[in-house]
Length: 489
Image 1 (tube, one colour):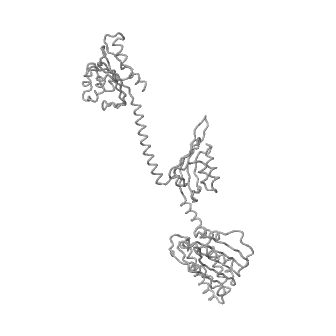
Image 2 (image 1 turned 90 degrees about the horizontal axis):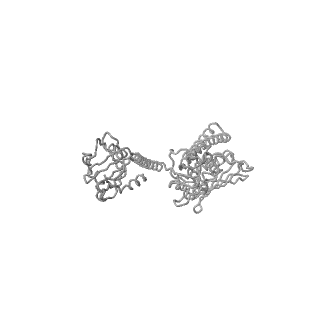
Image 3 (image 1 turned 120 degrees about the vertical axis):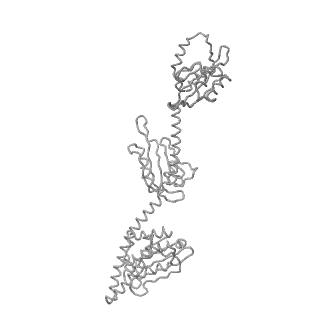
C-alpha cells in the first residue's frame, strides 16, 4: 500500500497536452484499460469524463461509454456533493488528496467493496490545473480482515469480561509462570489467598516458602515434573500453605504447562492455572471423619461402661431385684451423661446454651457415684460458668477420663477413689482429676488411643488450653488449664 501511495504521489506533475509526442491515444487507452487499478480522468469544473477504465466502471456499476458525461450525469441518483468534493478540492488547490477505506456500494446486486483512492491534479500546457486523475485500489480484503480482527477483539473483550466475572464469582486465583525468564504473575485474588501484598515482588522462592513444610517437597517435585513433556503437562493438586500471619489454608491448584518446539524439540514454555481456597471443605471433611470415628469410639465405650456396671452391680447386689433396680438407675445416669456429648456428634440436636463446670462434672460421674462405698467420688468445683461450645468440648474430655477410669482406673474397682477439684486463678481455670486406690500403674501407656488423642485436641484446639497426664503408681493425675475467655464461649 505504501508503494502505491508513493507512486501515485509522484504523478502530481501530470501534463495534459494532446500535441505531445508519445504513445498513440489508442495504445495508452488499451494499456490503462487493463491495469489492476480503477482509473479515470475528469476535466473541467463539471468533472466531465475523458477516460474511465473497466475496473472503475465495474466498481461503480456503470455501463457504456462514460467519455463526455459529467460526474452528475454518470452517477444519476447516486450523485452527491460529497462525491464531487475531493475532485473539486484538487481543482481549486492543485494538491493531491488521498481517501482510505472508502465504502463503495453501487447497488443491491453487487457486493460492497472498499477502496483507497488518490485524486491527482492534471495540468494543461500552461501549467494550469485542468482536471483530475483518479486512481483506486481495491482494499476490501484488508478492510475485511481489519473488521474481523476488530470483531474478534471485541468478542475477546466480552469473553474476557465474562471470564473475569466467573473468576470473581467463584473466588478463583489466577497465576502464570514463564519458564524462560522465571517471571510470575498472580491475580489480586491469588495474592489475597497467600496473604501477599499488592506491591510485593513475586519470586519462585516466595511461593516455595509459602507451602506448608509437610507438603513442600512433594508439591515442588510435582510442579518440577511438568518441565518434561512426557508428563502431559497437567497439574491437579491440593496442598496447604502458611500465610505470613501464621494461618494455615488448604488450596486446590489446577493448571497446564504449555510447550513449544525449539529446534524440533518440545520445551516447557509457560505454566498457567488457578487456585481455590478449599479450607472450609477440607475442615468439614476432617470433622466428618473424626465424628464417624468418634461415634464408633463412643459406642464401644458405652458398651464397655455398661458391662463394667453390670459386673460391679452384680458383685454388690444381694438379690436380682436389687441388682435390677441399681442397674436401671445407673444406666439412666449413663444415658444422661451421654446426652451431654450429643452436640459434638450432630449439629441439629438442641443443646443447652450455658451450664457450669460443676454441673458437667456431676452429670458425667453420676453413673458411678453409687457404686462402692459412699464418698469414693469427691467433687469440689467453684461456681464457674461454661458456654455452649466449651461445654461440649469439656464434656468430651471428662467423659473420656471417666470411661478410662471405669475400664482401667480407680472406678473399675469398688475400693478406688476419685477427687475432682476446679478453681479459678485470675483469667485461668484449673481442673484437677486425681485417681487413687485403683489398679496399680506399672508404667505410662506406650501408645495413646483415639479417645485420649481426641481429649487432647478438644483441650488444645477447642478450649485453647493445656492438658497434662501424670501416671503415678497409685493412680492417674490429670490437670487441665483453660483460659476463662475460652471457657465462656
